[in-house]
Image 1 (cartoon, one colour):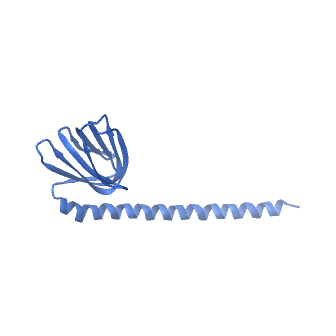
Image 2: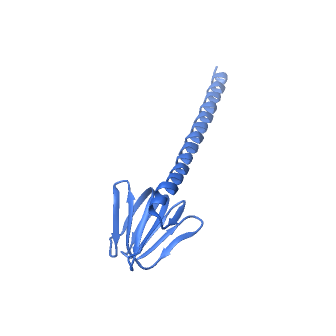
Image 3: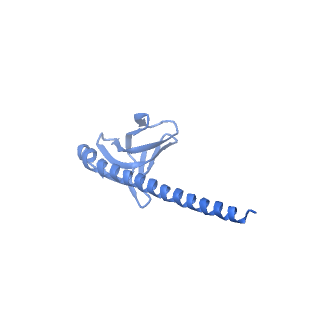
Length: 137
């Protein structure tokens, strides 16, 4: 199988001799072998792991994303950020914590932005109502 993990700015992993891939989605951990049915799922902040044909394990922490399997031979992960590493424990401890913190910061910023938009809409609505009252006889 071929595994590609990419961000908007770069291809982080492009390996053609992959025997198996492990990842997790909202339902839990799952594995992919050659010949897998076409598949599409979203990934949380997590570690995608794979073994090459020599049995060597590889790891990549991802900041969420979308995983697809195409024609049973192509696995692709599109993510905002990815960090490849050889030490699974370090990836879990350091990188996943940083990626999760970044994701939380984005959520907080989106919430604050939404609050500002709602406040602006309320203010516009209030002004429009006042203008209608002044125009009504």
